[in-house]
Image 1 (tube, one colour):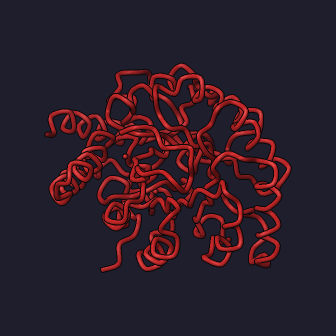
Image 2 (cartoon, helix red, strand yellow):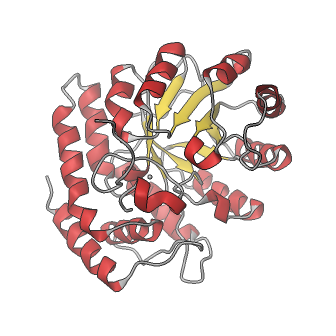
Length: 332
């Protein structure tokens, strides 16, 4: 049966924008820091969290909670985070706000590898955000294709990314998320960009097992990170990393999968534990706000909120999330 990212809570999902989060995540979309050598790292199989971006009741970014989140993620076994990816609601933040969020993460990294998502629909702002991240110490970038114009010519995409590579020199990962961008990253595009030494790899959030396997076989020297849990086993079997939205709430369980792999153990048991843990929160339903609420309960911090067009958790959801988190605390 073909697996999709239908459930954040019930299956091993990955980062998603919340327009389809109920469909993709169910909440509805894992050692040492990664080497800065994008193609020469001997430990690519790391666990990044597609981190949520906390906002207060007035929907302003909450830097204090973000600092606490990063320390929490590190304590629970994450290797790194992606700042302002899809799960981080990046389209809902201005350029100035995105800089502030990135600066907060990079000043409070807690030993995590930090990849900043800097993509926009246009090259000038993407370059601006990418250079800002590089100047502030980011370990890498995640850049989605320009996502307003559909079916752009391949030469146009090559030109777009080349403009960025020519001006930004830290590791760059392309973001393959055609369900949201409607502009896929292709094998041909990646081959056209191989001349750039800082081409680090991709994040594949498509959920397409066959397509992901082709990326991995075609580019074994790059880090072809999976963004979906259904491809996690294939990623780890081939020494690749993962960027997972479920890492926000199930950090310890995802980290256990990576720990087992590093210890040379079968990962089937920790994977089963992860899925069992996700099932505890499945009755709560979906949304970024639900994810943030569950995380706040786990951390013992004040509640944080999702920005419009998404809505806050309902009282019924809150009760179910509280029950699920309580069970999760007892989960071994």
